[in-house]
Image (cartoon, rainbow, N blue to C red):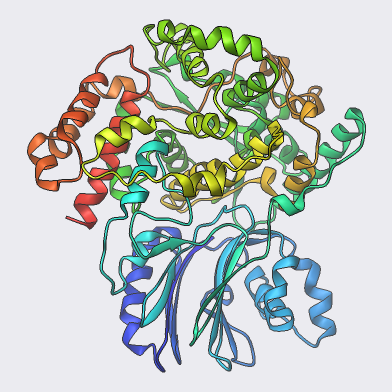
Amino acid sequence: MCGISGIFSFSDSAKQYQSFVERSIATLRKRGPENQSVVCKNNVALGHARLAILDTTAAGNQPFTEKSGRYTIVYNGEFYNYRDFYAELHADGITCNSSSDTEVLLYLYCKYGRECMQKINGFFAFAIYDSQEKTLFVARDRMGIKPLYYIQTDSFFGFSSELKGIMEFPFERVLNSKALFSYLQLMYVPAPMTMLQDVHKLEPGCSLFVTQNGVEERRYFSLEQEIDNLHCSYEDAQHLLVEKLTESVQKRLISDVPLGTFLSGGIDSSVVSTIASRYVDNLQTFSIGFKDNPFIDETKFARLVAKKIHSQHTEIQIDNKTLEESVYDILNSIDEPFADSSSIAVHVLCNKVKPHVTVALSGDGADELFAGYHKHMAHYRQMNSPILNSIISKASPLLKQLPQSRSNAIFNMFRKMSKYAEVAGMQIDEMYLRLCSFTPYEQVFQELQNPDSDLSWLKMKYCKFPEKATINDVLLADQKLVLANDMLTKVDRMSMENSLEVRTPFLDHTFVKFVNSLPVEYKINGTMKKRILQDAFRNDLPIELYNRSKKGFEVPLQMWCKEAFLDLENQLLSSSFLKQQNIFNVGAIGRIVESSKLYSQSFAPMQVWALLVFQSWWKRYLS
């Protein structure tokens, strides 16, 4: 796990860009604290910051050049099946000088060129330079677990693991107003856009081939094309699920450094930890608790799982003060606005886990595969209960008057009922986008001085459903929009800020293909979400896990708005600062801030957090 950066010059030499890449790599030091190096060859400068996981010796340092000197790679990620190719390479007369996956990956590219992508199982972003042909090949993993940003100007093509790495390159920083609108609506910026014009995110499953003539993009993996209609009984499907997920977990246990698992007490992380405990003696597991907020604390369930699997369990109890102190760390580390509030808790978790292990397995991705969110049940009922939809939609005005909060069981129920009533009866694309949004389209429009509110690109790219859509179509959309741009972005940024590698067994692309090919009724029915996952492991998990409601990994922002945020609000959301900035409608922002003080408002605190994140970023990079 590492950070990478580089510049490909469209002229003969990249020497003029070497210092830019050196500064870029310096910004990625937390992604790779062990070693930072930059090499310049012909028309390319490549940089690498290393977090050593496999072959921790200097033999695994990068940039890495193979024996002939023709090909050089910078690589961020893990290639789990790399040992399967040792015999093939040996037959070709190639002996690896290291025991790292980096060297194997480079030799596969030497042999197969761009077709090597079909042989790799893992998560990654990498770039390979061919000094003979003077070309650069850049690729990102299938699910979007690892990030890659890039920019193309008239003079150069540049790439980096993070936006702040790109910002060290010579180009004009201009705010992307369309990205800002999407950010305020969703709390993140969906690929391929970034908050800066001319800078893009490489989409999952895509590659770039850079030559002196320009940049060619190619998709080597598509979630849609990987779906087969699987015909097997529910019982057989459960057995296959256990077998395939076990294989995925086993692959992700290879490491030359200490390894553990996140254990939240939910089904997903409990399943991963349970499987891992069968292959790792004294497995280390970690959970985070909110001692000031018992409604969202789930440590007692994690404790039950840890006892059952006999893991070496560490419980990290944090209070509001710890979370409050982390706010400033988060704001200082965010290089592109990202306002999923649970990132604060993930940051604290990763920070506390890092002293114990360097690699942690997580349960991320299961909700988007198996229909685990409350919104999936809303979609299911929308598709199957037209009479109920009609009744509930008529109650929407009344439900909106009820107090709503994520920090109280009854008020949280009112919140969910109100949101469902709001979307009942909508067309599926409108309903999907609304359920993905934290701020309604109309409100975002009012917040901005000059809103760029063209959402057609977002609907066409992520919300284009077939005429007879099913929950499987909704899950596919979630995997492309929410999973890649929100959930995985959160885990990558917060773990890498703490030099911790997080692996996601549910997102092995072969496992994803299997789950996406299962019938809807195996995943969700009128009473149960994640049905097959829960049933397949029912005998392995404590029964108490099945008798509880799902809670998101949320942070009690509502309490902060009265205390921790006051200083930030005074600095970043004052009328004088907003007027000077000339981006936002001062009156609209003031109303949001005031609403956030009311306990009955469930979304206003998160909207304030999104504004604070953006303002902090804008002040640092664009003011």
